[in-house]
Amino acid sequence: MKARYQIYTILFQLLCLAANIIALFFLAMLLIEIVRQGGDRVNLNFLLAFPSRHPEKAGIFSAIMGSIFMLLITAMLAIPMGLGAAIYIEEYAHNNRLTRLIKLNIQNLAGIPSIIYGILGLTLFVRGLPLPGLAPGTLGLGRSVLAGSLTMSLLILPIITIAAQEALRAVPDSFRQAGYGIGMTRWQTIRHQVLPLSFPGMLTGIILALSRAIGESAPMIMIGALSYVAFIPTSIMDSFTVLPIQIFNWAARPQKEFHDLAAGGIIVLLTILLLMNAVAIGLRYHFKQKQKNLYN
Image (cartoon, rainbow, N blue to C red; front, side):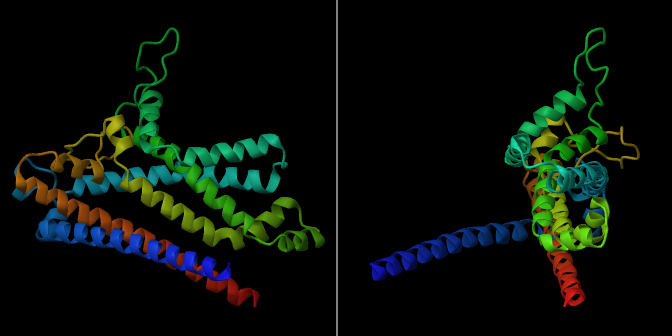
């Protein structure tokens, strides 16, 4: 019986290894093709030029700035709400049926396809809810940076909340009890004991959530982010574009030159995503080592 179990275990491990190798092989082939097609396009002029109908003059500067602008507003909206919700649920809320239902719904929200959030953003923020006595679109924000940021905030809010909840749960309860033992209030214990220990996990979750936001295209397509923007947005009510939308626009063109531009845009977007993930891993390791040295 034990020998059969070991055989099944080895077979399962080999199957998983083969699946990973096949997936990595096709991913590597895809990346090689993208670099081959768009590597020559990625240069300083490409990064600093605005989109153009002439492929040799086209760039992604407005898309990069639009992505950064939208990401900053998204972070300002989603991070305080996500962290606040996690702290309340884990540290203050009673473990009853309502709390468990809220936790379950937050987990479900994190798994909803992003295009659903795009439809929600189109209805709530772009067009505005129709109210009696008001003309349609009166409360709408239009195809603005603010509408896109609010939509993306809804998308990453459950992700940040779940990451913060996991980080708070990872803090041993003995630290809370030690705080109460020296006369700290609950908030003082959370602020001085729990939050510093959970900070690395929270920070990692926030950066990974923001990296998902910057790479999403479906919600931006649904809310009508423009595919051709030859200016930098200076107000939250300005029209805008983002990197995924610019890539989608070029890929939809029939000319091969625009396909090469799309490949170059993909390289830039992948580089940004990899850098954000590397920063998340590096910061987590740094703060974990700092805590380890502090408490040892």
